[in-house]
Amino acid sequence: MIISQITDAGYKVLNPDGSITVYPGWLGGQTEDFLAAVHVVNGASKIKTPGVGADVLKAARAFIEKELQAHVKSGPGEHVVLLVGG
Image (cartoon, rainbow, N blue to C red; front, side, top):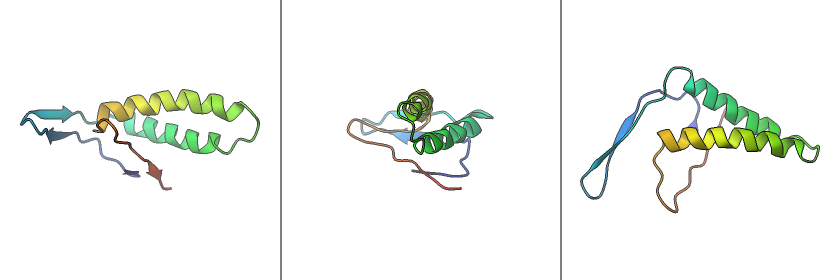
């Protein structure tokens, strides 16, 4: 998944059993918060002082995972990879 200028639109997935799963769009401001957290992770990964980067990553990771689970479909054994430009 490449996250750059993301839309707030939701989407629907037709499941193998014929049911439909709706993934909601992101509310105003959520995309900016998400991208800011991703950039924090990028910056924290460059901190060389032991423990400091890890503490920042832990906090940002929880938020990023929550947002991805709410807005991006992935099943068992599937992974989401973020490539952030800019």
